[in-house]
Amino acid sequence: MILLFGDSHTSVFTIQDNHKFMNEIATLNKNNQFCSFRTHPYTCFNINNKTKIIYNYLNSINIQKKDIVFFSYGETDIRCHIGYKSMNQNEDEIIIKVVDNYMKFLINIRNRFNFNVGCYGPIASGIYNGINGNNRPSFNNSIERNRITLKFNNILKEACNKNDIIYKDIFRHLINEQLETKSELYCDGIHLGIRAQPILLEEFSDIIQNYTN
Image 1 (cartoon, helix red, strand yellow):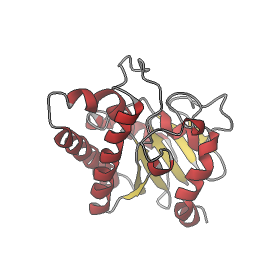
Image 2: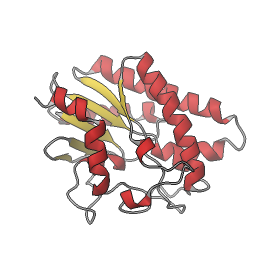
Image 3: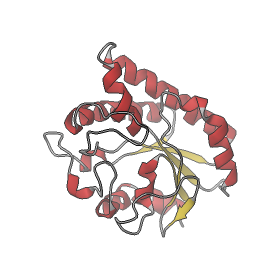
Image 4: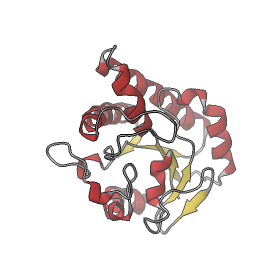
């Protein structure tokens, strides 16, 4: 099993159309290649305060030693927090702190559970600039958030490589050279739609080969 576990951006892996693009929270969803399990939009910064909840969710799923779980968090940090904090603090230092907290979580998961652990990096920021489901405003605009996402993902990828955690993201396929988000791949102003699924299949092709045979 290839399981995407995390925020609402896990839904794109298993949705069937763009009319129902958001899976229910705490529900295991499946298609031919992937499974997904959506939690609340926890931040990477505070995710270590949510371990009891996440452990309970993981224990409720029949995950085997041969399976791999990709954790998907970070888009909320970028959309609602990092940019605002950087007005008063160094942006690089903020991102490094957030990634360090996330890595502690991923390493703890690997040490606690008997399955393979991966990390799915945040997608390009959708063009919606308003108030989000967590009642927090979006930072600035999608181009500025994409600038932060690019930096975030580079630091996250490096940390995953250092700690032998498989890393995947499709950020590079979701933007143009000006860091503008390709909105045609989205089903609303935030979430990817089914037109992004071929990109995900290509990005995860080696994982599909190794974990579904």
